[in-house]
Amino acid sequence: MKLKRFLLRYYPPGIILEYDKGGNLRTKSIDLLDLTPETNPDELFAEIRQSEPLITESRADQVKQLIVRLQQKQVQHDHHKFCFSKELKAHILPLTNVAFDKSGSRFITGSYDRTCRVWDTASGTELHKLEGHRNVVYTVAFNNPYGDKIATGSFDKTCKLWCAETGKCFHTFVDIRQK
Image 1 (tube, helix red, strand yellow):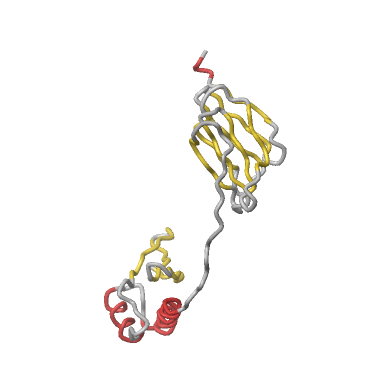
Image 2 (cartoon, helix red, strand yellow):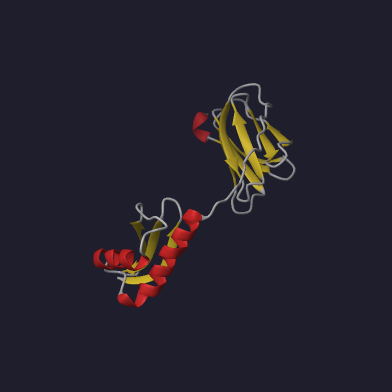
């Protein structure tokens, strides 16, 4: 086993070890649930070193720096107030599914009303209404990471491929077993 790199997890506090074992990249978590700003990094390193064979003495300074960064994050006071809230009412029947594009700037909703809608996340405005299914739309997805197409699936035994920019249906895939 060979240690490749460390990853920090701020909440709950911990250090992730990324290592190579027989040609396979694996990860292991070291949970630091009892970490406080008063914790002595040298003592904590000694405990970690004793229980984790992947961490050698040559990595001492690096691990201690990670511990200090976690402690600094604990005392950091972010005064963020999240108050953006919007209620969207466009479907006449309940939703079945929601999916965001990779950037989070748009999302799709599918509904029992047999339609899908594409929304702008920031403004809450409807960009497109995707119509054409003859039954409940039960699944929706963007083709991430590009986000230029949308796939929808329905209980009408069809899957439709749409243009995310225009709302135009490119193709309808039909389950041939239904015939």
